[in-house]
Image 1: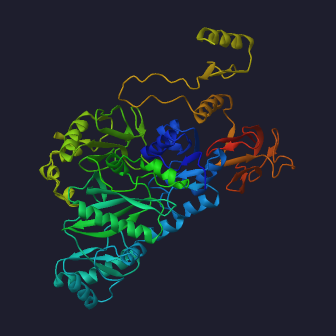
Image 2: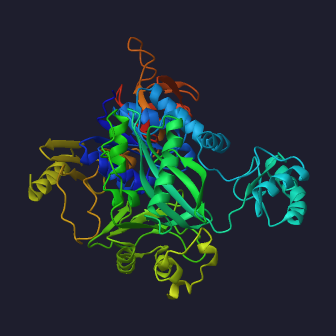
Image 3: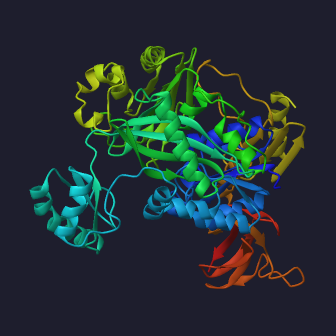
Length: 451
Length: 163
């Protein structure tokens, strides 16, 4: 059983600090790694040791496997927490760490590899009996083939490039004539963009919600789910607001989704924290993908379960059983997270620079996870997330009221942030009713900064 | 040591033309460099001491400087004294070794004439011995790290007088 006494955090920003705080509470030593652009970052200041691992560019620093492993070696770290993003879902990194006798705080390299490949993950889900979006098994090569599949699963359908991503080579078809005219275009586009004309076909959901299940497995083979997070408020696949429980789920649906998620994880002997993402529409849910890491929005689950997920990750990585009590599972109260980004709230253009004023809201039920501070200069090299505002309350109405006053209290000057947009969203009728899908932001209209 | 005593010490150092004085006591490290004129520079840090937050809700003020920051300040100080020298920094993270193995002679010593492409030291990372070569011709005027010392990316290794 590996003992963990000194943890290197292979990340930056709020998640690096989040892991350091968990380690401090567990009496573990910490090592921060940083690029030349992050010398003044808070995670560097709060860690016991710190190592500069490269220049500002992520590829040469936070994605530099050998630098990070060497940093662990020279500081005597015995474990690595990858955070999210960067190397968190890099099976090669997890493997190298293991070979260098460093405990990787996360799933096995095999799990990362298996679930990281979308086609394999979909196949694994199908075999485990987890509902997946109906569609063609593999690429469709002729229009006739596509038409037959579409008739079986029903319109509307979406054509996607097998080698694709990022929205290119995708065509939504409402009926057979639409499919006929889109089929060749989609293949041509796929050929030009990705070098392969292969396209596949899936049922298209017009107003789905993004609902994900937090799961956790330990080395004793126990796997639990910790309820859902509704992450439907997103813009171009970037989540803006997450909450738990979802306003759309009944206890029965929650149990069905939780059971499906557990079944999938059992089929691959999953260990540590993971998230199963589903699309949900009209009372049906479909497996989308699995994330084999801690998520940005993990605090939402922590607030409604009372479980510290990062500490639990470290516990499980050192071979201990999950501390989650056995027996009936239920969520307590309601929680919501707002991602505060340094970006223009109207155009969403990133806005790095110096934070001149930074005032964090407080009071009952308010938590702020951040690595920013007054006079901190947000470097232009990394993502724009500067804080997460998390509210907890006895029900959704209390959380919304708390969110309104906390967003009023949250003052950041010097850079533009998403706070004005969040203030508008929490006063939107449909958001208040909990009646929304992933299309919410496409339809959301607001007066900009004046509100 | 109080502020007045520190000031007195600085005056003494300046009066006698002493190069560098370093004093380390419990919770206090003081370094006075008499040579890096025009102004004597003082670096001191109080381990463990943390000023009180000025605004209750603001994040606490940064903790005392870390080793890296102290090193950075010392580096800045040395910049003045070593202006005109070419500094070779580490391209990787690892452990610094002056020779190929514990029995053999160091690759270079202070005063050695070196040429571009010559191996100056080894930095071990992930069990790999990475040879660090000189990017200039000149004479080694200073070797910064001790043998076996951990090295960060960008840390100073050698100062070279260009020829």
